[in-house]
Length: 474
Image (cartoon, rainbow, N blue to C red):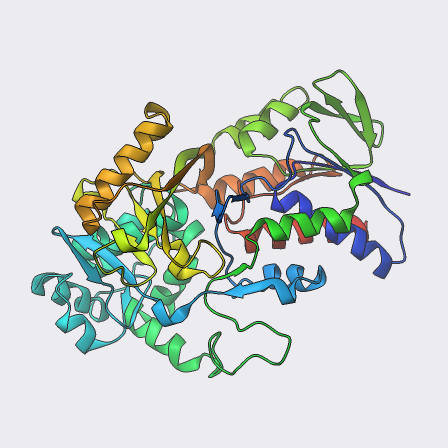
């Protein structure tokens, strides 16, 4: 019976353990799985707290059902009745530019315009900027297939104004990174493929929209007992529902908390895992689901080259700040699900989500909960320089300047994620390819998690399942 040790209790480690236990049955095998978590809680960046009357998300507040692996995992765990669609009657994205909130024009898919009139009527982009975006259909495609920064790619295809007012704030919210050095191949390979195939992002996006299936996520009504699928999905009791269901499926006997790993090294045909306590565990396979810089410290004793490659991955720090107001004190309209802020505006916040508008079950009906994002793409220093009181004070000042909310917060909660998000900088895919080749020298050692091949929940689940399946087939 092979023994597998999983290091890290975030969604990647949890998904790997679930797949190993479930997959062993279909492969007619028995496996011994042990998950080690250094902290006193499971879930990694998935963190939901019920504080009084409020349900607060510290990390991600949703998953994307188009990344089907998240949905499949939730269904496997019996969570279909708990899945929660967003309140799409209020949906919409607004961009703060020139001291005003502008609606993202209809037909803009991420950063690519696909409808003429909504863009023509919008005041977000100047007429020279709109004409420059339209020039995409005449711009020759890039002959070189080498990686380039997202900023270079967007400026080349759609112009500087599109980069600064649309692309940068949108992608900063997803990747908490800077487009100036963000790898377009690692983060938005679809756009590169569109340019190469159609010669134009606009033509490529129009073709993709024409060829996609007519049924959409918000299309036909859900069958009885099944949730309606919206672009963003969550759970009635928050995202931690997913990680807790994984724990219940794995079994507490297969999880050790407060078990910090000091080193991993080959021993015989398997590996020895040494804990900070001095205890040593042995396994046939080790799956490291920790951040790359933590994994590097674990393996540097037996492979300095592997550790050095892991340490080349850069990281950003960010905060989420949830504040609650009495609804009667909010005397300005809150349109859409929230707003994003371009870096060129010089504000101290990146974005805000109207949590209690976007989702049900988050706050009492007579209150409004807003979740504000700080750091990541810009002003990362605020994450470490401001204490909680200073962070909340700053956020309230920004909400006053941007929205005109002058009320005091009835409740606030600050979460900080130091080195919480990897930056897929230019050349990331080449670095990961080299990392994969180096790993072939260490059969039985597997690297999973957001550090390498996808930052979202769905990507982490998918890569964890691929690694788990590889073990089951070995």
